[in-house]
Length: 465
Image 1 (cartoon, rainbow, N blue to C red):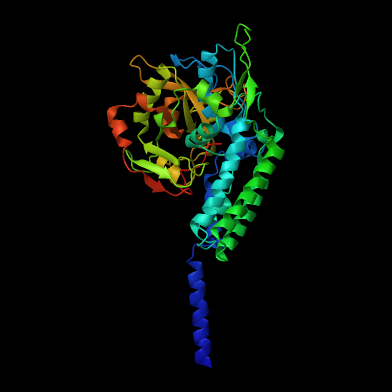
Image 2: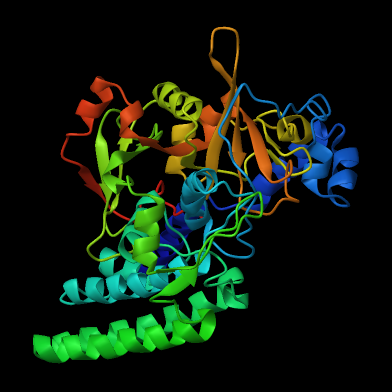
């Protein structure tokens, strides 16, 4: 009995020692932390008083940088008007259309023009729904815990996209003027439409998996899927209105000269406005230092149309992307681009500058991660698409600062534009879409590589919103 008690006591002591070694914050450790803080507190009381009563950004504003914004540029694409995506994640769609808008304004001598984003949004959601259901069927033999299946059910649909999403939907369905299919409340406030469609698609996904499990015929499964997509179409009409198959439109130029009405389909309108447009002429250049440079990558399931293009890009150092972007701007061609817009953004000045806010001095701590480390740890990634349309250079034609045309309305930033430094470009710019005609031979040859396929849940691959 004594021996058993001794063994039990030994076991309890060993267990306590093991528990103590697991890194828990015991009273002794907390006491040391408290005493250490008191010894080093210094001016923390004043900082604490300020932070507990104010927004940190208002206190961290770097007065050395305030009021010094220069929004003048040596090279600037001719653009007109600012769009507003409102409370939606359609920045990629606005930006894609805004790359084309200046061409219509110039060719038709207009004072302004805007495409219907609602029209493309309708078909984007319809096609994404179809892609989701087809992906569910493709992976129906896998367990729900499989990473691909899990990712699909977590992300059945959403507003986000990138350049290839725009190219897929615009080339398949064409475009229409904004007046032909205006915005609705839910196209500008997309939370509920995404919520409702996501819930319905998850329900449909489970139904299709069950039909596969019960070995239903391909014909039965396809018939059921068509019923599902038909219901999605109906719901989209309720939220967004029904897109036109044909419409009449006439242009009124800046001299108030009124053209004749002409009947178009969305596809014929696109073809007439952009007769030389080819999606294959454009390439995505990415700066992702967390991956090997000079390689082509492709992201699985990162598209909106089943038969469309996945997100594919050539990874290059930032210094090698800039010359191509400058050449495009000098040739009056704005570019789709995307970045981590929230980092060091001053809404008041309309600037993105590494020196806008000094959090380190305020908090007395350093933030030392590199761009690659921020990507890998989900601390940074592309979050918003905008039109890259201006660059200012020094006497040797090296870039000093750049400018975006944003889609948050004319009251945001500098009359709707955001100016950013070249240093900010290096740290927080990720994607630029450049016409192949502006690339050199060396870079063009790199595009011939077979893409390395990457999973859609990778930390780098957030859609633009």
